[in-house]
Length: 311
Ligand SMILES: [Zn+2]
Image (tube, rainbow, N blue to C red; front, side, top):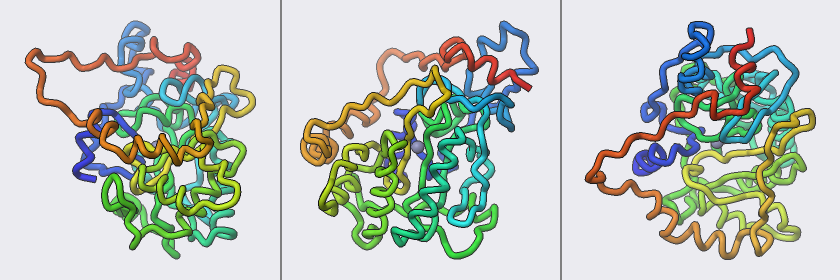
């Protein structure tokens, strides 16, 4: 993890089970303290990061997973019969109600059918979605959730334990699964999530995809949804399709791997060095580069202004 941190920071990737110390949250700026001009100039992550409660509107995922917001969010209860939410201080257990329902269903199915002892749930979305001050490029519209690859213990964790416990890595490195940690129950859990019609994508670290390709038998079409991506070595990421009633929600392009499962060429690419070499931070440039301008409300769908300013 330590080795990956600069890489993650550089690419602004997804770290649902990530190291809190590595994240520097942007200061929260409540929209009610700003006039109209300042509202449009303030980085959207500071506005959305200041909202403690959802916008009291009909549930709607607005925009794209990595550029949007969320109206009428619902909270996943922090302790359920088959799940517990981690990192409560982040207040990111909000999502579109369709996502909350899906996580609850996965938790129960995994416990009853897959021998998985309940879910530890990482980041979902902020109460009104939108860009986050730390950690993720996506998770903006309430249709993304991170699930730890560490099974839930048989007791209720204290709030402090939910802050301090680290998710256990299931890989030895970016090419090798840790067979002392990885089990068939992990594979069954991911297959279960991929089997739901609502699920568009699941992101895992490349050796996890390799382990699933080796493990899968019979109908392997579910593997098409499970895609390798950086940073998913201790949790996996579930992304669902746009739910009904969200007309401005932009779906994940379907684009199945050419071989139907992604176990061939796509996996070989991720098991190779090219994607990692691309992601390595390079030497400091001679001329200082201006950091990218942070996303403001002007860069988000128009409805997001109403969502973030609603009482
Ligand atoms: Zn994620």
